[in-house]
Length: 107
Image (cartoon, rainbow, N blue to C red):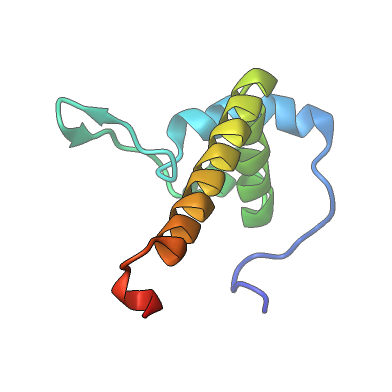
């Protein structure tokens, strides 16, 4: 279902991405920063689009790509390993409760 105000116009060209990514990341309210327990201001996607001469879809696409690019491959791998380990521990924990003697759920 399409989101009102967003029209996908194609892919983001490299020049537009390079020109706008830091501005979008630095000013977006979607990436909020706390300073002295107060949210630092920013611009919403519509305001950024108007300021940069982009569509709403382009602003959101650039932000999504830039956020992903900001994470190193090593950090992605560490996060993936932690997620897999947590899943394995969760599954093992569920299985051990089912098999434990005296567990009222299994009676």
